[in-house]
Image 1 (cartoon, rainbow, N blue to C red):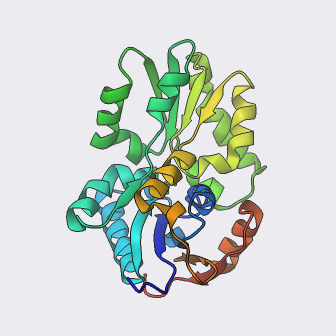
Image 2: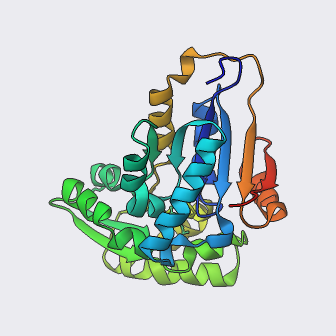
Length: 266
Ligand code: DGL
């Protein structure tokens, strides 16, 4: 690493969802440049095959490392579920922080022993998620709700779109019928419709997302507090989709400025 350059953290998601994690990273890592890749041309991942998700994930990780990232954050539950292990195997010396559904905090929070997990079909069918459940979900009723189409709707960015609200109603109904009191938002897109999901469940249900925990883990690994760098930090967003669209969503969702560009060759 060039000691005069601000160190870089690489972050990615299938699309705009990981901006919810980027927001937390921005406050936890004040001394680091951030480069985020939104693979919006290939989203949603959650309804793709494992092979497809894995291939995209490896390609983006290579790109971020070639750009100089010293730590990677997989800001996508689906990519974590399918490909985190193979990424770690391929780059054993690179610290990789990955987001996964907050089953553990939900188990700690539930009062009635019924929790729900909303996530993509690919996340819920993965071996990694099954291990997470057997490690933390013992003695609790865990109700799994695959949400095909929901991340795709959120990609469009229209938070009061009737089609989006209809999907939220459809996916919350079985969990409400199961009397869950805690719901895990197991996809990084879902925090952007937190208010709409909360409204569907009512105020007595607690929603759990893990963006802050992931950012704290990255900060622990980087020891950010002890570093100061001469140049002001940069936050760049690269997308395989439409850069103007990403710029518009970032301006709406993030409380800091970003440089947005199309990702060439990805
Ligand atoms: N944001 C992603 C996740 O956390 C993926 C959504 C998708 O592309 O299906 O799972």
